[in-house]
Figure 1 (tube, rainbow, N blue to C red):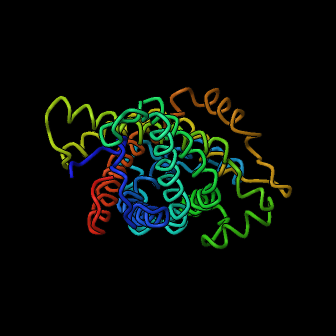
Figure 2 (cartoon, rainbow, N blue to C red):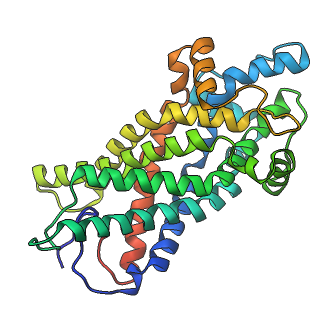
Length: 332
């Protein structure tokens, strides 16, 4: 059977690997494989996004600024973490990151797939479903919706991950640790802000996820089809790599500002009522970041975001397609 791209409908033929549950499980497995491979870049990105406010916080709590942990770039930050905290600390917070994908990636893929099929069925009258393709604007709508819904559901795990990632930095700055494990972070968040506190920073988080999935799903599909159409290349690893790099660039460009805001809101200390001590909300965080650190502070961590998104997307889709092939079904 001729292999189709993800924005083309497969012939209607039931296979258990196409079922809701199997698609969910396969996407979670593929996402966790991609997460383990690229997680150090995510940790580096988070540290870069926080470093401007971390120094100010250190000065406020200790009365002095500790500059030895103030890194200026991605490589220096990653090497500093490995040297001062230990190489394994590059995977600090990976447990809640894996938990997150149990919700995020599973919901993301099955939501996108369901919406895509419904939109294809509603617009395929008089057209062979095997040859029909989803218009870009509809693919974009599916990607944005799937990203926003999945991230809102997975936001508590993302909050726990961000707080775990910053503990090594706090210890080096001489500050008291706030959390000791993912479970402890979860309990502390609920204790201080209630169940509602688990969704702190969810607004910029959802905005980021919507933009990132717009870049990842829609751009990947569009570039992949264009490359295959213009070059005559088959659906191979070369096409996957080129499409993933382009998708990662668009996703990183669109999503990094919201990612910076999300990270800072999630990492800020809170009072006894669960209210943030640094920012009132995402708009306040955005305005303070730009006014105090300049516009390009919104792109702190852009390079590791892009560098991570390209191999993450590539690893995810290669794993996803390979697992489906092992289950005896064709391309997604």
